Length: 215
Image (cartoon, rainbow, N blue to C red; front, side, top):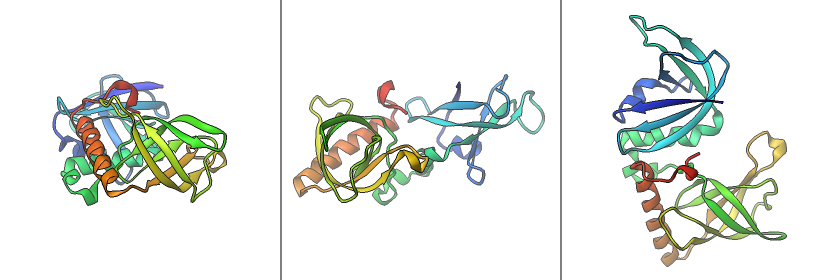
């Protein structure tokens, strides 16, 4: 898989390279890969902004600079990256300052949860202060109450959470298998959860997260 680098100087530059109608992003480069090739786009915004890995396939190329378009390629983004795109759109609009516009952070965080055969270790696909999606080939039934601990960057102690399974995805669905949890917290736990998420979001928006949690 080709890794393409896309460095945007300002948040508003995202609006210039992203086509919301076709869900494609233009990556300027002198030697673009061929149409149809599977690629990943390593995107950063500003010197200390968020870093996101986007997946897709090359839809169109322009190998030579011309009067209308610089050399580069347009990448059709995977439907699996919709949460990342929503986050980026919110970030460039400043919508992250409004909690109603908050998006899930698409991050690979280590998580241990109680399964039918005892503790199970896995990773999150996304996370916010209201819930998370856990990757697993054997999701629990909807309505099941799950206790879990999540390891967050910069914190020595894991975050203990409890939540109910609200939706599941199995291998036969043709999507990434796993289960979505909605947290069920007491008031004191909600305060801790909010603080933990705010730290995580701030680290993401300022490019301070370690490489291994960026997906």
